[in-house]
Length: 430
Image (tube, rainbow, N blue to C red; front, side, top):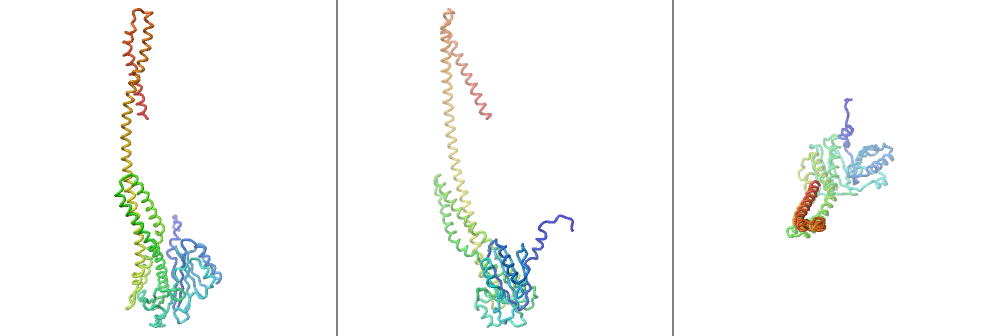
């Protein structure tokens, strides 16, 4: 042991590099491949389905946590793989018939087991692997096997083999691939077969995004028109009510865009990933041209690439509409906020004017209050002075009132001023 703490996923990550190895293929051999669309769940049901087939043939079932498994079932071999969205079942069997596609690798499978296979069939491929030493297919053979106008042939693995296909459906819904082995080893032939099967499977998985892109196109055009109309309406509207109405409509358009993005994002992203895988597998074939025929790369570039670009274009258009709607909404919100700020400023100015007026009125009331209180206080002093004349003959009530009046007014004015300062100081502290 190294004497250090190991990462919990270390062994799993190392083993992942060696997982899903290709099967060795010895010519003559026939291969039947199924890809079942399953979504992102249901791996347990797929594993149980394989286990049921193993039980019928007395073979060991796949491990409980496995996502891929290879097993010898006697008359045939099975390679099962669980991918993110689909599950593949590939059967291998020695080819005994001189007819390239007369024998099917899964001919011994129980029909009830086939019918119970979970998922929806997305790809079904038959591959015939022959040895060049026994002679390759003749021109008449190729015309019987493939559609003449669509036949594609190319040399692969540096001239170690030659492939024929037409990417069309034939008997019982299978596409056909004929591989003639010239100098490839069994392992190398197995890798070539696997790449050809993956090209066909990933090609169809990539095309799943095309119907969605076509369905989304008229919706995008409608949303684009609505967004353009709303943007133009922003220049025409000038009042708060119009801006609020535009903002509500713009919010609904943004919701439609986000809803469409949610519905299509995964599929368009998957199309991009599958298309990249197809390109990688074609590059791994190391094709060499056979004069007078299309190569697989040329066929994919002419037929699959436009579909991938359509999905990419729809995805970019959705993202562009989302950005445009966001910018328009931000601009409209800015204008609404600016209008509110202007209203608030006007309201504050009006409140300030009212406050100044109220202060003036308050000062007037305070002056009147001093006068009124002083009047009552001086009146009381006058009553006292008149009563004092009886006891102090030299005391004049009029002179007493004249002297007391300014003193009383000054006292009450100073008291009111001092009280106002205390109130203002308390408000400043708050």
